[in-house]
Amino acid sequence: MQPALQLALLLAILLPAGKCAASFCSRFGIPAILGELLVGVLLGPGAVNLLHLHLFQGGQATGALLLLAQVGGFVLMFLAGVETDVDRMREAGTTAFLVALFGVIWPFLLGAGVGHLFGLSWITACFLGGALTATSVSISARTLMDAGQMSSAEGTVILGAAVIDDVLGLFVLAFLAASIMTKGQSFGVAPMASAWLQHHAAPAAVHPLIVQMALISISVGLFFVIGYGAAKRWLDPLILQLRRLTANEAVPSCVLALVLLYALSAEWLGSVAGITGAYLLGYVFATSEYKADVERSFYAIGHGLLIPLFFVSIGLSSDYRALGGHWALLSATLAVAIIGKLIGCGFAALASGMDWVRSLRVGCGMISRGEVGLIVTAMGASTGIFGRSEVAVMVAVVLLTTLLTPLVLRGTFHLRSQQDVEEGLAKGAPTQIAVVRPISLPPETRPDSAEAPPNEPTFRVRTSRGTDSVSLGNEAVSNPD
Image (cartoon, rainbow, N blue to C red):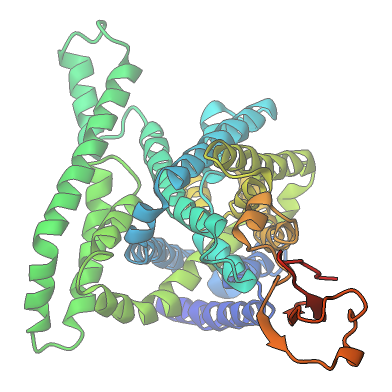
């Protein structure tokens, strides 16, 4: 079969299967990406082994599919940038930033430490820690929405921190990506400059690793400054000119070209992962007057084709059979994924003035892992940093934390916080007095006629537990029972 027909058949199988599974999961309140991941796992090496069937031998169609999936990763992060709530990031303030910062540091350190204890190399262990850093914004938001806590104090902190720690997670990914450059690799400004300095500028004076990391830091900073400044200056005028063209769908076509250009620039100028450049471009669009138009035009191609392929392809690359003999690594990684967020985010919230119940809610709301963790996993697999067992472990951790988060977060909202009580927000708190009005009762029917003076007014007080008649003298008497 010709490669084009092989690719067409693969798309005809994977896209409907992924979308049907996503729809099925959504119907039961489970995040849609889990359905797409599970389809990939079921069609992967551990079960059907779709890509190695006789129909798809030759590998050309498989390679094209994986390339489309990588473009899907760029589009996913571009849309994540477009959907970034910049105002919420500003409003969340110091508390959200501290929660996000420690919610990145603790999982990274614990994950890297556990990976090294289990015999992984330091670079593989650091990638494992990096994959555990970022919280899934969409899963946190959906859980808070279902619980009716989107506008609560902890809800605002969770959502703000989830957005910020996605950005911090991308910074971690940027340095991880830069750190795996091989000595002979010449693509990018930092590797070329590092090689030149080591050969011509007193190579023995400084350790090569220090030179390389210094150049990486400079190139990352240059990319963010130049990329952000250029997009902020010329993006809106460019979109305005594109809208005047008579060609159909000129805006999404050219914006997709910009996404790919920023991804290329990120790797060449910034020596970071291409998805970082795609996210940066999307972040600029988040404050653009054309945000809604771009988001709407990208929705179909993104969520209808490229993004599902990205998640399905990650499932295809994972083999649950590789977990055999690695259950201890899975258990330890899952434990640090949960504990790292509970400790890092929870204690940061506690130090910021929240009580322990609200801090626990914040920690639980940050447990779920999602898109960024899967992107780090995909990058680790494509570069050979992650083997089959590490990919299987990370996919399992994403699935389990995503399923666990809604359960534990809903449970914490049944705990009564002292701050809830003080603010009158605790569920089931009785309304002390909803209506107070004087009534006239004949003396013989008044329930307190024996005790109340003849001229003392009787009031009926309606509370959440019923309606009582009480007598008021010179001082108000509360009788809620």
